[in-house]
Length: 296
Image 1 (cartoon, rainbow, N blue to C red):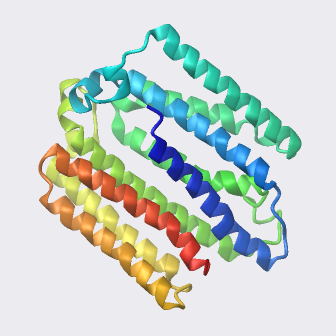
Image 2: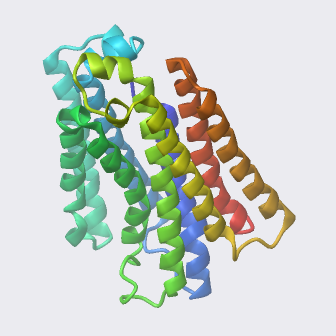
Image 3: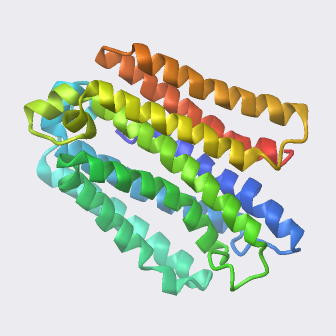
């Protein structure tokens, strides 16, 4: 119900961005983190609570579709009353708001408090309305994941290159990495939509596969994965200096090729489910590369 593997991935992603993307740049300019380790842990917890709200809202409004596509989902097998569900959502939202207020106050980020309601509104709009028109929803979800990088930069007061002595190359590198995450997640969203095509069609949900068809959607994912490999090569080109880095990037590219090969032969919903899992592993290894490239 809480998507524990996804929450671990989100927490790890934020920690890796801070330790292996931001910290090396800070060491170059002799600068310390704005948030203490404890404050950053609270910040991650706050983000995870918002993610949980998003997952629960998705499951609540997807109950009819999940009865067809994913009958093992928690709310399908264990239906909650409307009152209990919204008490859960309200309780988690209150905790997230209190955490945000506390962190904003002690870290002098009161001007950034708008991020929480905008994010909650986004996940709510996605779950209630945009899930019925999945192409826009896919883009929104991918942008929300990419925004985790921006959140870390905001927390360290380095989002604006004019406000601090951070090299412009850092922002270019961060933008490239964000583009990589966006493209991989968009690929996975489309694959999941192919997997869910039967239920979506029965309930008149519009998705990229329902518009283009399965074969053209598969070709679109292949195009995105090829573009991802190109972005990856641009991202790592100036950092490859050791054999372990070269081997790691080779493995990352091999995972891309494996996804493309598997996609070509995928026919059944279970095939696309396995491919979705492989794409999640690809994203996980893409996060791990931050440590490898920083000579961890």
